[in-house]
Length: 113
Image (tube, rainbow, N blue to C red; front, top):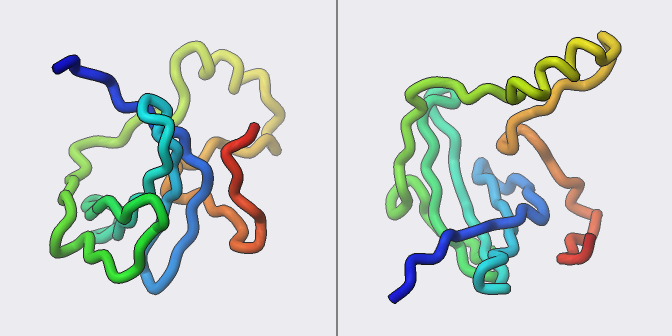
């Protein structure tokens, strides 16, 4: 059996009842997959669980999911981007981590670019 890298493309995310849902397209299998998660302890702990291709409700990431602990923060910009950021105007927005981005619920989510 060949070891294949998983590659996901985030199509959108939203929050319902304290849970964050993320709909993704798995490029290596050409299929859709949804994840549901919860962020706890001021962002230091995350629980995440697969929720099927249709973002099933009732999934309990805190009970059945993976528990991830933040060891240290990841840089938001790489070294090559850091030199570009110094050229940006002070009013330019800073890239936010994916768990802080939102998609408006009325905006359709499609797999097309």
